[in-house]
Structure formats: structure tokens, C-alpha cells
View (cartoon, helix red, strand yellow):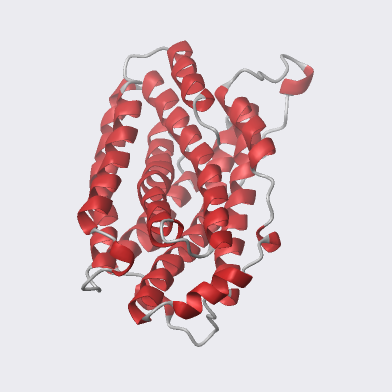
Length: 306
């Protein structure tokens, strides 16, 4: 890709000023308040002791979920830059300012899960972690995610941005990550295990909730301006949903009974609920004005503690 050489002809800060009431700037304020935490400061002493009490299947399911999270966080860290570049080149300063927190936070999440695997689970370089990356997992994280994000390097159209944001914010974060958090809370928090891991996952969940809020705003803004692109958002969601649900099913299929009392139907229903919730929010953007998009987004941001 050849980067554009267009010169700047002015700056927001010295002309109209930053719109601090815009949804991205409100999310930026939340990121500055809630997003400053350090993965290196968690004390995993109790978590390691808990790990050593787990049986073989309990250890395997924790390692399975964690290896998928670690690789997934690394994947979005690697693949995110084209979206930031596309928004920056449109001169959307407030949105780009918030997007700068994405890359920092995704890198922190990668750091957290790597530290957890090394210091709690005792994973070393001899571990065969990629075997946990099932066909459906690979379809999303090895193929769909980089393809959708890297498309923006040569195609920054509204359609390409919608495909990228749906893949990243709606499916990877809004369905898979949130279902994965539910897995950690069910395995660990409900059973009183690994307090620092639970605390770290809660921090990560807060970060991701801001990312999802921005993704819904971005897609809604694009659909409001281009109502025909609702079909693109819907098609992308429906295309990726079977693989997303397939990851959940594949993860449960290896255990009988499933450790920690987890139930496949409960998690499939949770994943579908997340999917339907995202779809409903985006569908509201068809025919809506930008002011209406701002109002709905502000309401969602104000009701969220992340």
C-alpha cells in the first residue's frame, strides 16, 4: 500500500475545536478513567495455588479458553491499524483519538493472558497451544478478521468499514469475547477460584465494552448515511455467526461431563442473545439522523459503567 501524501490544510483544535459531546469523546473520557490498569500488577499467587488443585479436564478447559483468548487478543492487536488509518484519513479526529486507546488496550490484554498462561498455568514453549484453535476458530481469527481489517488498506469505503467493524466489534468482541468472559466468570468467579484472574478479566471486559460501543456507533453512523448498507452489516453478521457458535460448540464437545458445571445450551443462548442485541441496535440506524444516532449512543454510554 502507498500511503497518501496529501498535506494538512487545517486542524480541528485550531478551528472548530474538539466536540467533547460526541460519542467518541465521551468514550475517550471513559477510557482515560477506567482503562489505565497494568497487567503486571496482578498478584497471581492464589491463582497458581487454585490451578494446582484442578483435575485434568478442569485444567484443559481453562487452558483451551485462555489459549483462544491470548491468540485472539494478539490477532486484533496485529490487525487493528487499518481501521485507525481509515478513520484518521477521513479527518475524524475525535474518533481517531478514541481509537488510539484500542491498540493500547488490546496490547494490554495480550500481555495479561500471556502472563496468566506463563505464571499461573505454567505454559512454556513446548506447549502445543495451536491445537486448541479449532476449524471455526481459525475461520474467524486466522481468516475473516485479518481479511476484513486489511481490506481497509486499499478500500476505505463505507461498505469495507462496516465489514471490518462488524467482524471485529460485533462478532469477535460482541459475541465471542463476551461469551468467553461468561466462561471465566462461570468457571472461576462462581466457584471462588483465581481472584486475580477474575479481576483482570473484569478489567478486560470493561475495555471491550467501550470498543463495542464505538463499533455500534460507527456502523450506525455509516448505515444512517447509507441505508442500503444495512444489508452488508446483516449479511456479515449472519455469515460469521455459524463459526462463532461453532467455536462454543467445539469447546464443549471435548468434555463429558463439562467441567465446573458449565452447560452448552446456556452459553449458546448467551452468544445468541449478544448477537441479537447487537443486530437490533444497528438496525435502528436505518433511516435515522445523525442526531438520533448520537442520542441513542449517549444513552448507551451513560448507562454503562465501563
